[in-house]
Length: 502
Image 1 (cartoon, rainbow, N blue to C red):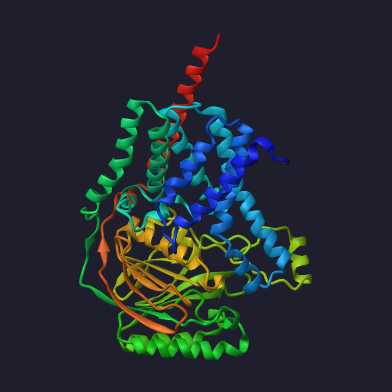
Image 2: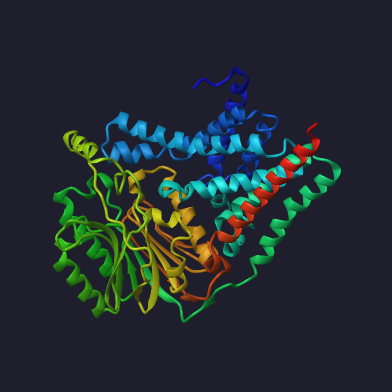
């Protein structure tokens, strides 16, 4: 579809603003852009027709995800061995899908919201944007990456996440963006309201930082994170299998005596079914020294008809956690059988994992309960609330080596920090080649391993009990409020329009 000439300038500006938004996240962390970039788009939507607003919104989000998820090419082509054209097509496909969300948002904003005024800037626009961001996080399995709130892990606003989650932070940023426009275009009374909107969340964040939602539950526990740093291109080569297994065993022996030892995602480069003796010996040796080992492993059921990306706890008992939120086109392929046959003929790598259950219990290790997650699952804060409430700490095993030395690992680590803030608990993060670390209950980095280096990271965590408000309520209060505000804004606009009609 051809973009109207009158819309092209808006689209170019939107593309630039959207690309700059990606800089608000780690590793750059230019967090003010999470307010300024949305404000630019809101200005570009002023007086736009529904069609113009849709195109402008599309190019804004296309810019954000083109700049923010460029690393997909590394995983798809360099490590996944997909042909360049397939990798590029999948990347473009993601950008188009993400752009479509904001195209829908732009159309709805231009069609149903007031054309101007504080009701648009401080109510309708932030609420509608937040609803679309939330929709993007779950619709068609969801892609919650680059949600605005993640940019605030190191600001005074971050404690708000413990009350209402990452989407509450997104709401604050969108309200702030609307307030900037109100200061520019609004009336005197509207500008006073805008100043309050800009200042109040920061004051609330400072006050909330003093609140302890969860409590220590026992003495500090020593932990060790084993980072093997196996290059991704060498990890699954059969000739390297024994070398990798030996490396992880030797690194673990350095940490024996530590109550909890954590390995990364799929650390043993073979099915756990084929490593019964190896894992049994590891279990026995660890227990002799008073250690529990928690490790990522790929396993199959008895007849090998189903495969699971899992976490194995060699603790008081043998326990498994099976990954529930699988990654489309990486861990499962939502394509017809004839496409699978074509992929086989093209000698393209693919695999399908089976989804684990929704309500899995925390794992026992080192005398405490760990709410487990595998890799990308930590981008979905609300799916694991019941397990976290029963846990003393969180553990996430991951392998960001799929994305090379790109920004992906930094973005992912930032997401993990947000999960720690929301839960008020320590989080142990074991990554194949980084970023491995221990994160505190306020999102602070307690310990961090050097990247791309085989190492054993040692630290202490304190078991925590109790619940933050977010653990008790999840996302529904903030999203219900956004929906209510949006409905009221639309109804008020329609009533005003009818009253003005001849």
